[in-house]
Image (cartoon, rainbow, N blue to C red; front, side):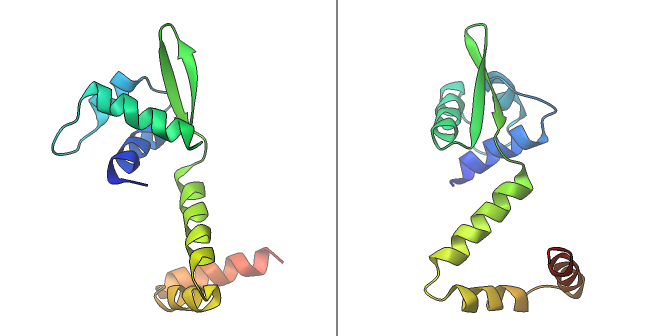
Length: 114
């Protein structure tokens, strides 16, 4: 996902409900600023990728993410590990970089998933 797509998703994830493209544009804080048509293009791309859904609101659409930020991060991590030539080795490197608190949380999650 590109940085502009990520910035648009961040706005949607932080919103209390679905947003129109103009609402997204008003809340985007990126430099250099983008135009309404750019935001509309990004929202259409995210919709085609299945990352957002849209519903009609008059002549416009309102957009909302299909997954939470955490669900998308988890999906991305799983995809990244699967793409490695040795997923177990990649996972091992990832685990080695965890903080003690993160390691404790991971152990707790693994115990509870059994």
